Length: 279
Image 1 (spheres, rainbow, N blue to C red):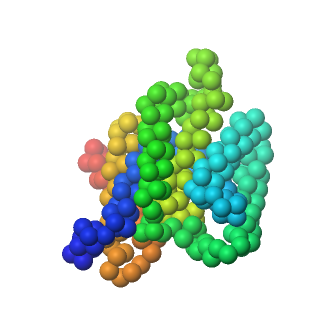
Image 2 (spheres, rainbow, N blue to C red):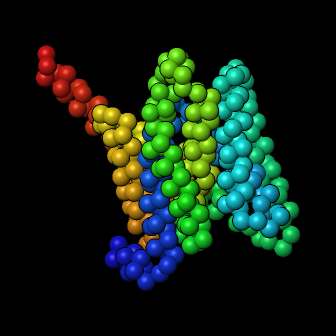
Image 3 (tube, rainbow, N blue to C red):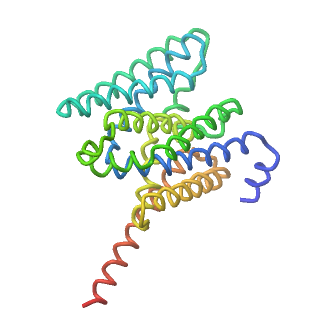
């Protein structure tokens, strides 16, 4: 552990990793809460895996893959959102199609990129230690946009998440609000891909929020607890993985998963204990 903190003090790459971990924690804590409450985990998975297509195309034409990820994530969010709202019976099919085609297109374009040896594994499974300062700046803007949007539209998001029919009666634009929510989830996915990769992005998006839900008494409290847990998971994952030279992204997800299982067990035992005490 002491070696980790020495590296953190002296090396920019580790400082960048900690910063991106904190940015990701805020995003996953806030948007992960909506994902868990609205039960759109599968939709989020479809968005996250489609992103590889945009990354591959951006690589092939010489652009920053992060920009390709943003464009593709927003496109997937809008398409899936519209299908989900208007043709619900085809939702699973379109998500599965975008999921598979997005991954395939990304792999094809990355494979055909001339003169560029791309480490595909870093995007599939994440490489938080390789995040550059430029990427942190872009992700910081995305984080700010997410927080600002939630502050402005939180009540609308809550209404759509909990009672869609009531929202329509109140004159809330359900379609536009839901699409905005999915677009913000898409931007969060882009941030988290830098930390844990495409394959495990859903774990970090949902596990902190799912753990927080066990103990939070309101949606705002759930967001705060989830953001704190996200920061704990990412920081502890970096610390635990450093000396044994383990993949940081996978370590973060394992810690988050174990924390969720432990919290669930403790909550279950507490409920059973109090139930017996009231008899």
